Length: 229
Image 1 (cartoon, helix red, strand yellow):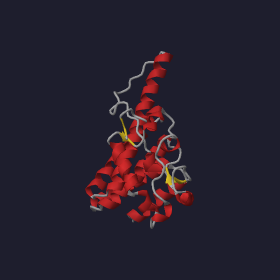
Image 2 (cartoon, rainbow, N blue to C red):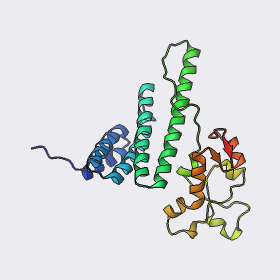
Image 3 (cartoon, one colour):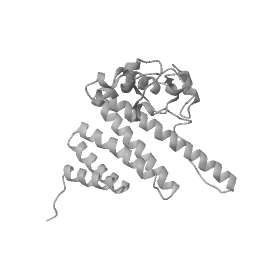
Image 4 (spheres, rainbow, N blue to C red):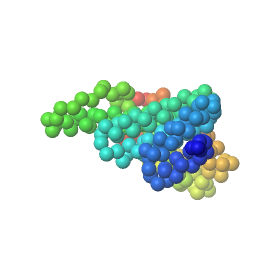
């Protein structure tokens, strides 16, 4: 008799494959887990795994052997993040919903750029190819406020608190602009409270509307040429 593997065991297998950089095997296992969670109406668990599935598919695309596989895996990552975002929306989990929206926009931008570059190379090489019309247009988006932060002293803030000042690393709004602080590290009880404070959330919402936090954002490669704060 064949033993049926439960979600916990599947998750452990998926995590093991992920740790070993076997991205596609890991993605297949995570996909099975999400289906099982959805059947049981465990929406929060399903949302979390869909989000992880998006990350794993995106990583898998980076090791793809062909351009067809690259596009397929990037598209799978986008679909997974969209499903996660929709579930988080149902659950009224706004921080995770916004994060998934940002990841989706970022991946769509990369995919569109790759298709345009492939078309240009084909024309230069006089090779005939067929590429579908990009479904999201010229979509470059800032994902910095969803992916990283660092503690760094910045001129213009309280010198006594230099060692706990939080900013976005490598951000033109900070380095060249007027965004000096996103909060002080020890004002918060834990990392997630800091990560989802009012300043981070406001900037994220504005970015999703195309409103950038500083005029210097237009000097960044992720600037989409919309509005500046």
